[in-house]
Length: 463
Image (cartoon, rainbow, N blue to C red):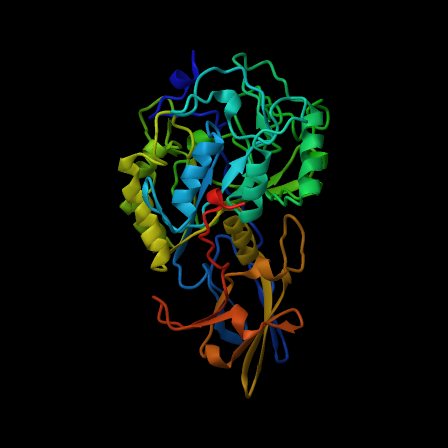
């Protein structure tokens, strides 16, 4: 069975392993006061608007102002050549006229591999590149000869790549065989350290030959990455390196919800280490169909990004992580099929008009985490109010002190933003980092830490 039969342009199962699992209740929010100091300690789950006793007019907003919902396209690198990658992200991220049309100026990032060692056959694009030409750092399993190393390095540093789709593509015709070994993990992580890569998002990949995959810590079939008794164990290296968010792939056939009130759920890996799992939108729901109707091909973007789904996401104030393989089809000349351009332009319009935040996966997941567990206090006097961001009380990964990039987008409703100050610990935010906002759709004004500055440079033509 060749590659193009395996990865039919409409179905495109594309070596994506199967899905993320259910929600878990977290500690309920409680507030307390101490004289003139009011402190918000813990979030609720499901999330609710949070204020502090004695300062009920100051409320933490769910999404960055002015957005009413948030969305990420989480793209697995399967089937993507460097040339395809350049064309895709030139259209999605830059502000230039392209072969596909006017670019969208969105912050959409992709994933990468360090090495490809599959024995599947077939081409991956119209230029005749085969599966061995999928975008990876090294050419082969000697882990020394570089292939797309310069491209990957550039795109990680500019933000067009922000996730790892495991260490590589180890798909085999016989799913009981594998060529992965622990050295791949050790060499990959050592390279990330040396290059200053700071990946926080891990996405499982492929069929059962990909024993590097991670389990959810409860049910395990072939995954050896987090099993200390397995020769393929590597999370003793991966988690200390900095991976915090994992799509563990055990139940993607049940990922038929477009939006969630919260993308995150707790996972305790097989070795006892903790990460946040996250939900993706992977397939359509059919009650009478025996096999999953996976939607993670560009040909199905019009089924994923429907007007109805986007309207519901806005109305519910939810989060969405749309699973895709943007470079998967082998029959495209332009970046995307013509029929999928309207839904892509739809989300671009909703983003630029301030309705749905479209953000790279790592940023959206980090924002979700920070917003869930932010601890803040309020001081009031005759001159106004001071909001102090004190920390992030993450009950799963542990409490920590956030830095500036952690709190970008954090927004507080307040009666008079002009008379409200915002502090990160003892340091007051300068005005250039803040946005004092007029009333939004709820009728309330607010004060925000500014979101990341847009970057629409065409990095495919730079450097």
